Image (cartoon, rainbow, N blue to C red; front, side, top):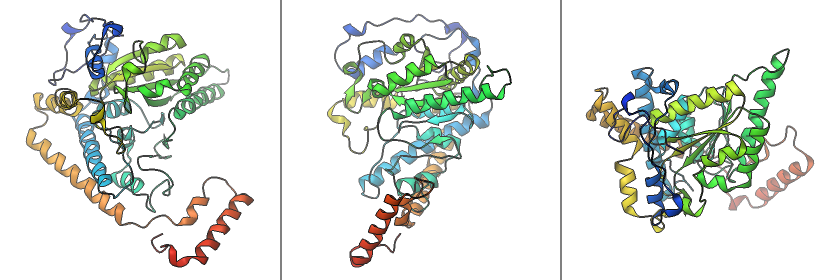
Length: 416
């Protein structure tokens, strides 16, 4: 399947004369060598001839465009600083989104707060675009008393009921079947609102996952249920070339993840995940499709993970520095948008530098505040699961209180 793109690496938008450019299909069985090369060779571009997809939410105003750019810079600064904080032992864990910012901001700009988000763990930018503050991000990573999760989850497992962003689950793929259930609810809710039935939903369920997640049983179950139940669900795959250390050529021999969609009777499209305009346009069209037809669609965003999988990973053991340098310079999504803004005289390099410094300082200030705050009180671990605490949970709580009382000199509870 070809890749949809609107903006080239030099920051220039493609004009109508290039729409319909020839796409050369690669025979993946004949591609050998570095798995990164396989990903590079398959990003050959063909452009959609449907002009409606060219209506872009990010190009609606200069203010919106600059806001998207700032959010991408903010996300990258947050990643850099919090990853370093983990290396310094200040937080226990971190996962960076570096190289995938266009997928986050592009897709989020095409959605509304009515659309419910089911993320994997590398979609912090979607939550950031919706309004999650740097203070909220850092409070969660430092597990302090203002953490919405009350310190009971690993760092980067964000969630916000107010922003319709379901809390991250560590197990791979669980969010897919949950997203389908949410989509089915939205469909039934719309039917119940209309007296005669058959009313169309006004919001969709959106689920994000990586290429490795496509190898889970939940992926198959979710796709099949979404298709057979005809749910308004947008499946967004971040194909960044690796499932932790497993390259795509060891995961499948078919045409990526989106090539599986026809087998489920599902519509699909593939987009250049490093092109923020293309992602925004593709997801906007995908949402229009699922709401109009009450059927799911799969969007595969082709990108490259510039960071390690997590702070527990060393990606230099399974990929070359040369590939990292190419994707981190020529194909970097933030640099591509930089070039567009420079080309259009919307931003100067000096203004860009000031923006980076401002966002860096904002992250540092939020982190320092979060680090100084107290930890949640230990009694919070027994709340929020049941409406009324059952007997066995009350018993465990009393046992903990007795234990702390008997060994009060061994535990520092003053900071909680």
